[in-house]
Image (cartoon, rainbow, N blue to C red):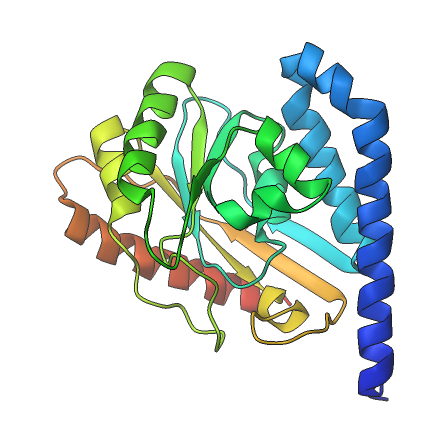
Length: 241
């Protein structure tokens, strides 16, 4: 039976409050150890992301994995605000960075944790910071041996369909001379689209594809190729829902 709208909003706010409480407690207990011992930051964030999804009522299943050897640019479809937790989980406690809406860094407790991960803040509406962000991402990959995660659509979809990919993410892969790994998620749009105020707890499937070489491709060719691969991953994930 479908829940009345009032109860959907009530459940949403209760789950948000529970998540904020957990983040607040973790700020108190774990923030100083993470500052002192940087090697525990990413495993802690991965575990915390799993806890946040659990609180929000998300059952996540990951198909495939990012290889332990080497480092990659990892890209997927952008459907919901919990994508920030999803990429932490598929990153599997390894060092990584991501472009992030700079407004997220101002969210109490969550923003504090995100800053620890050294994301690259940008304004997705105006594009402010993107060019410098690309240069910083290339530096991170080449000098700190990290995986770089991104959503080439630039913002969350409002209709559930994959929007046009922006080529900047593929400049990063080509200039860093690393392979690109596509992934696709299903169920995340139903959980919480951008233009809806309440969440719908349920299952999210993430399908991770195989690494794709950047050799001999320009950014436009790579952009089109990876968009097709992400679409394929989404379909594989949808079939498993």
